[in-house]
Length: 154
DNA sequence: GCCAACGTTGGC
DNA sequence: GCCAACGTTGGC
Image (cartoon, rainbow, N blue to C red):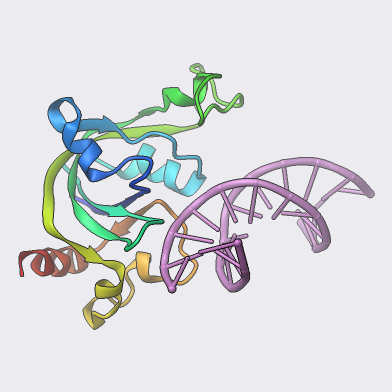
């Protein structure tokens, strides 16, 4: 079983938006980066867990946990000319972009801010803390996962 | 295959 | 709004 961290701009899709969806489940669509595509398509498995991270907001940070409930399948938003994430180079016969479905597991009572995480020596090496990191999905080690979970319980 | 130009991300 | 980082594009 793998652990992940998934970023979303709350102005586009927040953890509260996820909470309002039927079965609190939603496709994680719109990824247009090959490294992340490969993780979505090949590595994320049903029952993997991920931190839900709010990016590009004040303050950024981890706001809860989601579970992967459907493994990688073609991102249909790439096929829709009306859609913001339309990509004419992807088609149903040879899809270029993939997505997974995520289901809400828990929203933390308090956000764990990026600043808080940065101040934890135990989290050295966490990809989100690396300078210049721009990937919207990153793997999280079991050690880092458990440490962050402990922070959320405090 | 190189690399300059350009676009996007995302913290600050 | 700024700008560092870095991915993508396309001319050559």
